[in-house]
Image (cartoon, rainbow, N blue to C red; front, side):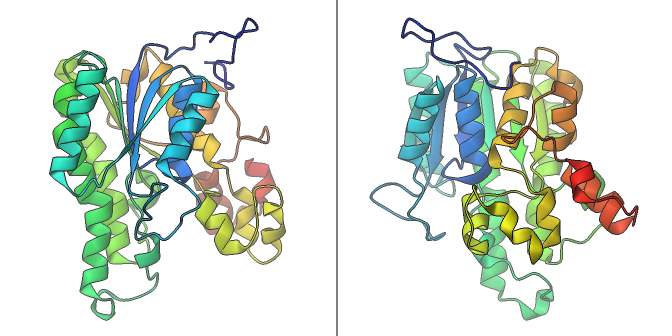
Length: 320
């Protein structure tokens, strides 16, 4: 697929993209990877239902009013797709059931792509804190946000997705199985929350096989999300200023990179070859030929394994 997706036709109409006519649900699309995935699916022509808890009227526990699901839907439409914002708390089964019923009703019983990107637990993570020193309620909340939400969403959305053969499920996480499988992510609850989606994708790949479906887990690398940039006090325009105090930020990637990764997967008629696998934005960029917004192809997980831990002496720029 063309990495830039479809663009407006010169006569003012819409040029068809590889996902024109397809329907996607991006659960957890308020900001970061979820927003970028929704926009890139829209750029490829899809109708994208975007969900989250932060709207123009209400802010979630994350506490960021700057990004809303309404804005995400508008960005999807501006990119060339059709964005539909549906406020949804994915810990409330009744709300998720109503969401899926709406998609079924409005799109003629069709759901082609399900992206489970619900998280919103960054404010709870205490890296380097022993399990017995961390407040139990915080840890369990992380598991609710990062695991229970995905299970509730899949339970309600998969009956619609399997109604038509060839559906795609993407579990978004942090880290590949190659990386996470032999390393501790410095907080037990976070470790569990980010490894569970990898195993979910593996299990769902087995269940979807008879329906011609594909399930994968996808991770960005060192993500320059809105929240991450704000934490460092920079913007997307001057993000490299952070490298002086955080050298590994040199491998950072924009959310658009993982968005392009998922859009490329969704448009690939042979994507079943990936089913059950743990994939990264950098890996898929090499496979499909897309780049990040700046034209580079960062491969953060290889960088951390080889240059940081393996002491190859190679710089982050050599992994872009």
